[in-house]
Every structure is written in C-alpha cells, then in structure tokens.
Amino acid sequence: MQAVELTVASLAPGGDGLAHVVIDGERRAVFLPDTAPGDVVRADLDASRRPARGRVLEVLSAGPGRVPSACPWSTRCGGCDWMHLSLEAQGRAHVEHVLAALPAAWRGAPATHHAAVEGLAYRTRARLHVRWERGRIEVGMHETGTHDPVVVDVCAVLEPAVENARRNLGALFQGSRGQGDVQIALGSERRPVLEVRWTGEIADSCFARLEQAVKAGELAGARVLVGDASRPAVVGDPTPWVPGADDVPLRLAPGGFGQASERMNATLALHVAALVRPLAVDKAVELYAGSGNLSVVLAREVRELVLVESSREACDAARANLAARGLRARVVEADAAAYAWGATTRLVVLDPPRTGARAVAERLAASRVPHVVYVSCDPQTLGRDLALLAPGYVARSVATFEMFPQTSHVETVVALERVRGRQVSGSAGAWSKPGGRS
Image 1 (cartoon, helix red, strand yellow):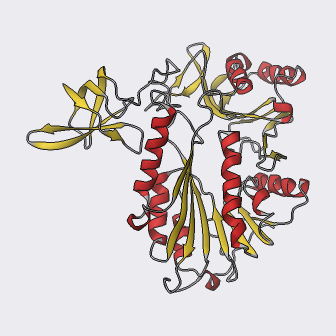
Image 2 (cartoon, helix red, strand yellow; image 1 turned 180 degrees about the vertical axis):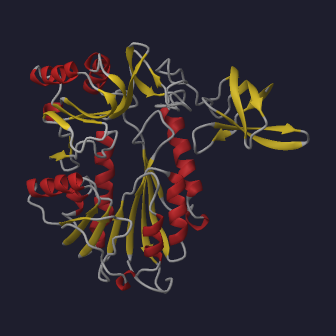
Image 3 (tube, helix red, strand yellow; image 1 turned 60 degrees about the horizontal axis):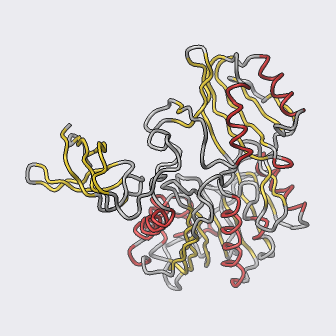
C-alpha cells in the first residue's frame, strides 16, 4: 500500500469512482469506493490488482456532485453505495452507464430519463440478515465485501412502516440461535409482512411474538421456513400488496419479486404500456412475468397475451390480479429462458433477473418477432444480450428509471424493432413449446 493523490474522473458501472495513476511508467486505472467525479483525494493504493484498488484517506476537494451523506453508515453498509452523490449526479451517471453498455450503433437512440422524485424513505421492500452472535441478535444489511450485518439505528431509505418493522426484528428473534434472511414488504392495510428463511433454531417465543404482533396490527403476517422444512410456518396473512400501475391493488407472491419504489414502478409500467399501444399487436408473450406487474397493463393493449413465469406462487398471484380486473391472459408456469413462443407472436416483453436473458436473446436473434421490449435492472447484462440482437434489430427508444435512488443500480427499458431483411437463420416457429402448467 502506498498513499497517493488522485483525481476521480468518472464513476464505474459497479459504483466505484475511477481515477488514473502512473506506476513504473504505465498509466493504470484505480477504483475508489465512496467517491464522486471531480473529487481530489488522498488514498492508499493497492497496485497488486488490476484495476488497482484504493482506499480514501481524505477528500482534499469535493467534486460538484458530492453531497453530505444522509446516513452515517453508508460507507460500511452495502445497501446504498451512492449516498454521497446528489440525485442529479446519480441520474447522469446512470444514463452514461446505460448508453455506454448499448451496442455502438444504438448509442444515439432517443433516450429519456425518469428522475427520482424521492431519494429517502421510499423503499417498500428490504432484505436483511439476522444472526445470533455473542449472546445477542444482530440485524442489518451485509457490510460491503462481507456477509456480516451492519447494525444501524435508522435506515434512511426505508418507508416508515418497513423501517419500524426492521427496528423490531431483533426483539422478535430474541432467544433464537443461528442466522437467516428476512424480507420485509407491505401487506394488507399497508402493514408489514415478513418472509423468513432461517438456519438453526428459532425460539418458540419468537412465534408467540409474531402472533402477538399480528394481533396488535403491527404486522399483517409472516412466513417462516426453518432449515430443510418442506413447508413454512404461517402466521396471519403474509401476502405482500403494492399499488398497481392501474391504481388497483396488486398481489405479490410471498417472498417473491417486487420493485423497490412503488411510484417509479408505476411510471415504468405505464411507459411499457405506452410503447406497446401504437404497435396494435394481436399476440404477445411476456417472459419473467412474475406476479403480473406489467401484465395488468399489457393485457389491455394485446388481444392474446401469454405470461410465462417459473414460480408457482407468482403464477397464482398473476391469475388473481388479472381476474380482479376482469382481464384475460394465459398464465404458463414454465422456465422463461426455455419457453418457445409461436410463429405468429408479434411482440416479446421480457423483464429478467439481474443475470439477464442470454438464451432468450439468442432465440430472438434467430426469430421473426417484429417487436421486443426489454426491461433490465443491470446495464452490463442488458448490453451483453442486446449485442446479440443488434444485427437484426434497431432500438426505437431507450428509457432509464431511478428505481433505486442512492445506489449504483438503475432500471432500463429498451424498445426494439426488427429490421426487414436482417435475420439469423432459423426462427422461433421452429421450436416446440416445452411443457408448462397453464
């Protein structure tokens, strides 16, 4: 380690600041956590790695996007790696990262940015690590680079009801041994619900306290899965609910996926609907459909919609959400990565996990599907998948959404249209549909 003075030039996609230093005549990149573009810092430098890594000892002068952190634990807790940046600086960096990840020919596509309306107390979902350590229960987000929970007094980004549930977790699990992950969401009447996966022994008194919290209205419900148990213990009603983009409550699968910001989620879903509406397609497939977050708006724009989702509980929730709205669509329980759409499909909408959808992109590249809408939470895997589609498609639009303020993560929607005459040999119509539960 050696102390050097560095100027941060930009932010890397992983969230760290990027600076450069000359070592033995060679210009080397240096990653610096918790820095902003324009920062001049004195830092310890570890040149044994490539890129080199730095640890800030002192900020000598602050860049224009640096702000005081709203959380004193942000440099340790792994939850908010951009708490030291203004919302405007976060948005600029996100747009830069998304455009840089696109295939070169698409970087001039029309791009819109949906800025964060709220940067604090916005998250209606949280995943925390709980463990028994040295005679007490510790609760927190994983510390950066470790699996140790960082115990904090207040989480600045959690919605108040979720934050209150977080504060009570230590008392709920008192007397238990082992460790687990706890997901907090909002259930009926905006009361918190818990999804617990525990390794070790949960005290009997914990279940009594959960029942009391439900009876008192502090929780709507909880599901607790201990060790290798085949079924969870259920207390109250653990079903999460969020406002749908159509202003009708949307049921989620317990422990299933849901966006962090309810307001921005509605903005994104309505944007997808607006992209699909002028296409006037008869047949569409939505892959990685989850509990129907996008489906409830897509079903109004498409005559024949097929939803594909691998989680049975999410499929059940999607059917319930469609039925509650009087909407028609077919829900198929199957692996979205392997599902083969019919030859007459005119639109594919996909919203894969952070790992992306390489297999789907490969089949789309060899298909005749004229329209694709790709929703992504990771610019790098998005860029990887879109590179497979670039020979046969053009980007009609690109939009970024500040779904996760205070973090280096961003949500992106790219609308693609097939270029006539450009197609890899083969088509999706040549694939047979694998079995699935409709």
